[in-house]
Amino acid sequence: MPNYTETEIKLYVPDLEAVRERLESAGAELIVPRVFERNVRYENADKTLTPRGMVVRLREDTHARLTYKEDKSLEDGISTRFEAEVEVSDFGVMETILGKLGYMPFLSYEKYRTTYALDGAEVVLDEMPYGNFVEIEGTREGIEQLVGKLALGDAPRFGESYTALFERVKQKLGLTFTDLTFAHFEGVSVEREAFEA
Image (cartoon, rainbow, N blue to C red; front, top):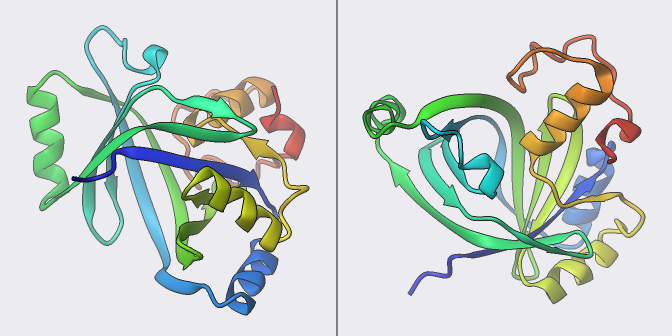
């Protein structure tokens, strides 16, 4: 039976190249080379999903995937939540199906992601329009071990999603656009403090 529990940590790490070098030195396996990713988050007609911590997301990189997530628990910056994901054959057709079911796109976001495997965990290097992050997904114990092994103990931990951090950045910087895209952040400088509550 599949494991529907996602346990991960998100770390703010401006210098991803240093992390990449540490990963390679530690013998990490490159699973997916750097790829552009487009994500669309959906809401229902009453807009009750996000306030309840629920996510319906359609993602496209080398494949298209539909993801459902429930609200998370958070401890020491490590989040745990229910997640179920399925690959779909056609992004556009899935968009149509979601629309027919009453789900409407409310936010899109972009990133470049490089995926490694190390010590039974997944380590991703995420280049977001507003900054660089490392996500480690695995067991709680495995995550903490890799944080130490990759010398990321001093990196700020964020339990929020990229979209929740986007809302915080928008508020702090007075930004009015609704999508987290590279085009929108061109020429916008985002310092670490903008992510903090």
